[in-house]
Amino acid sequence: MPTIPHYDVIIVGAGPVGLLLSCELRLAHCSVLVLEQASDPHSPLKQAPFGIRGLNIPSLEALQRRGLLDAVTAPSHSAPSASRPHWMQQARQPGGHFAGMPFFQDQIDTARWPYRLPSPASESMPTTMERLESVLAQRAAELGVEVRRGVRVTDVVQSPDGVQVQAGDAQLQSRWLVGCDGGRSPVRKAAGFEFAGTEPEFSGYSVEAELENSAALTPGRHYTATGMYTFQPPGTIAMVDFDGGAFHGSSPITAEHVQTVLRRVSGTDTRIQSLRIATTWTDRARQATRYRKGRVLLAGDAAHIHSPLGGQGLNLGIGDAMNLGWKLAATLRGDAPEGLLDSYTAERHPVGAQVLDWSRAQVALMRPSPATRALAHIVRALVDTRDGATYFADRVWGATLRYDLGDPHPLVGRSAPDFALTDGSTLASHLQTGCGLLLDFDNTAALRGLAMRWTDRLRYIASSASDELGLKSLLIRPDGIVAWVGDGVAPYQHISQAIQRWFGPAQ
Ligand SMILES: Cc1cc2nc3c(=O)[nH]c(=O)nc-3n(C[C@H](O)[C@H](O)[C@H](O)COP(=O)(O)OP(=O)(O)OC[C@H]3O[C@@H](n4cnc5c(N)ncnc54)[C@H](O)[C@@H]3O)c2cc1C
Image 1: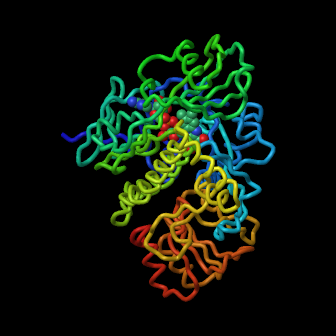
Image 2 (image 1 turned 60 degrees about the vertical axis):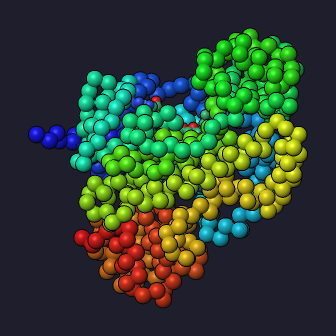
């Protein structure tokens, strides 16, 4: 007798990606269980300074569109300034960095991003993992997501109808399963996903320690003949040791080992008296060749890993969750148009591949050879120009990220501008329910009538806006991506086809 799935979706991993995805699915009324191996969601590594994460524009927009932005980035909850990384504490306001080379806000020419309107999500902002996870966990609880902590998933077996999950002693059933279980993803391994990429060149260290003779270390970032280190008094150190990634994961981190590496990399005789916090990472860069295998999907670090340089991994995972949630929900409801779920891989895989290359390019500029240092000097000069700063801000902030949806209009495939509507609201506030939107600046009877045929999936808004960017109407997906733009002359059936392409057949 066939077993009956208990949940629409089981998500493995209650990190930021798993929690956000669970909220997206619950918004669409799916039943969701999240399984998390850690009993305690708190960790010193999730707090400042090591838990600080830079959120890029697409991530901030995602949080804004779900009404969570203020809670995640409120000043009292984001990183206290004293514990922010050294590069964030400069006299000029930095916008981010590339291989440690900062670019500055005063050089960024945002006028080159014509489809961006003023918004609270208009530039990168910091938060901590602790804050982000606690806001998402609270939201998930409010929406009715069931989260079970202290439960480790060890196996996943799928059939044509569902997925069976071994979680501790329990066997659980669901119709779909999403592995949001981090870089070592047991789900990815159990389901047999191919994970292709490149091996590491270094072991990275993040350490908070009691130091003796710390005066020998100069605060800030330093490239040396053997690697790179940053020092923030009194005892916060990050190091990159070009050992081919040999140390990472090979043995426990001891004060003696950190001291040996610090002396080799910094060339000083600073002594480590004791370690308060220590963790390692590498620049291994791998990506699942596809994000879906039957009824099992991957999102976040489970789908792609790379060095934390430039801070993109979390942003990539937030983008995965926003892209996947509504597509999986439509598939579960049964109204997903042909190919919708597979557009998740088609849209997100190229974005992930770009980020992996972005992180590899930074490693190439950090190698401790004279030739690399010479090249880095040239790149630094380019970063420090208006063109350079604008280019790097665009890439690091994700300002003009665009999916290729096959429509040549430059706005289609991009995040919808945050139009200021005449009633004082902005577009973002109308996306909180997770529905798609048909925004009609001209209040046309034809569009209103058309939208009526999809009212369960699509909201129609007729309003003018203070700056309409020369447009007449827009079709916006639940993830905030523009799916179609009306210029007032496109035939009526074009918009109808676009709605069917993304939202399926009419009711
Ligand atoms: C030092 C450092 C700095 C970084 N800085 C930035 C930054 O500035 N910006 C940025 O965008 N990214 C940054 N990142 C990357 C970012 O932290 C990760 O990409 C992000 O945390 C990934 O989220 P996730 O939810 O996919 O995975 P995780 O946060 O790893 O969560 C996975 C969860 O799955 C659980 N799990 C694993 N296995 C199982 C199992 N078998 N059963 C049940 N549960 C399981 C884990 O316990 C964990 O809670 C940085 C990373 C590091 C190390």
